[in-house]
Amino acid sequence: MSKRRPYVRPMAGWWRKNPFFVEYMIHEGTALFVAAYALILLTGLVYLSRGEAAWNVWLEGLKNPWYIAFHWLTLAAMCYHTYTWFKIMPRTMPPVVVGGKRLPDFAITGSGLAVAATASLAMLGLVWGMAR
Amino acid sequence: MKRTLKRSNAPIFWALFGAGGMLSALLGPILVFITGLAVPLAMLLPADTMSYANMLAFAQNIIGKGFIFAIISLFLWHAAHRIFHSLHDIGIHAGIVAKLICYGGAMVATLITAYTLLAIGF
Amino acid sequence: MSENQRIIEIEVLRYNPETDKEPSKQVFEVPFTDDMSVLQGVQYIKDYLDGSLSFRWSCRMAICGSCGMMINGEPSLSCETFLRDYYPARVRVEALAHFPIEKDLVINMEGFIEKLESIQPYIIPKEERTLAQGEYLQTPAQLASYEQFSSCINCMLCYAACPQFGLNSEFIGPAAMALLHRYNIDSRDGGKGERMELVNSEEGVFNCTAVGYCSEVCPKHVDPANAVNQNKTNSAADYFMRFLTPKGGAK
Image 1 (cartoon, rainbow over the protein chains, first blue to last red):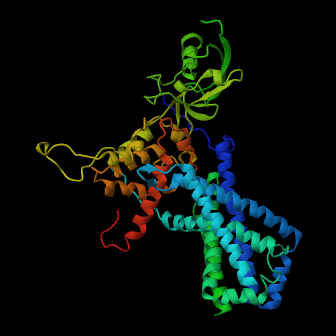
Image 2: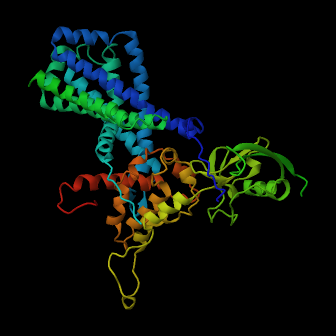
Image 3: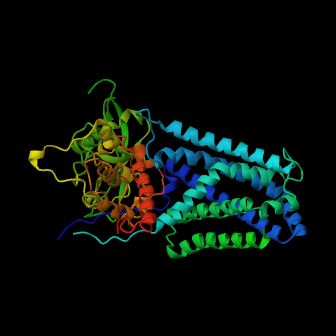
């Protein structure tokens, strides 16, 4: 009879055992803020559909210090999501070859962040232009 | 000997996750800044930026409707996919139940968004 | 031994299937010199302190892929990891994570070998050629497109770095996917259709959550994460395109 008895180690708490995994869990965790923000917007949309008085209640609610604090936190989480999204990008896309040479990782990440910055400024400008 | 392989239906959720991830990476921070900070704190932008008249006009415009729909629904599909995988990561292998809660939630929110946008009219 | 010999503590996760219910730690005091690898430290234990310690090794020069271990929790080739970098602290050595332990530092790699076989890791010619027709030619650019992915030495460090494999051992995993990708993008190969079935399956690429640690630990800089994630795009295209093309896509 075989004396083999392979031992399978438990996985509990694996993500706490390596700094790389801790960072992974943090950037995955930004999803909670993305979800919360989308739900805040959805609530606003529903209030908007109920007329001016309802909308103003929602808009006034955003001035609550707790909401302000939460939005600062969400802003930080969103920025971290943006950074990590483009940081992983070189690993998730096909190689980009420019002039016979493979584009280095930092160029791909950098381009992504530059596009995000440009899109953000354009968005802000558009909103500013429409509101005036 | 070849195992029988079942095709995964993950591409649907993965594609929505990717679209929402890209959209929130590009516009998430600035949107949070505008709606959550600049307007309530009256910084940088005109005071009536998100007035009822402005927002109603935006939500009645076809492009505005599309934008609102894409932002809310894709953000939620992105988050749902990550949260579903994170539950698995931390040892909650709830399978079908977790799937129903995460993706079902995103689906319900998507339908509410669509319904509300239609109710607001054109 | 030279004058600058010092003593380092090596903590080894031991497991004897005949006597132990579960693995336990054992600490050895090992004299070492600056040029000694962790593998040499473990060999010292076997030669002078405890002959029952089991581990795999062969080439001692980071090419055979046999001596992978968790060293202070990181998947590493023990032959190219040096004791001096840990001294004066204790260095912890454990069998590669996520694999079943057979004994001490020896893991069961049967599942990995099956996965390697399942991806058909050989060229399935696009067009049959007779010997008289000569070899299958390839340009340097065509070689460059897959060369990186062909450097795998099957050391399994990427599997020990992949929590998704740890959580679901059915997942085809990083190294096998990198090799699969290597053949799929080879200009001489025509087997992509057959291999995509595995990529698309429930054991396939969508188990990956883009942690990316597999590519960090690869001693040969293969970037398996890139192979897996490029195939998510391929698989998604295959998934949606089959509705558009009458015969397109794998089953």
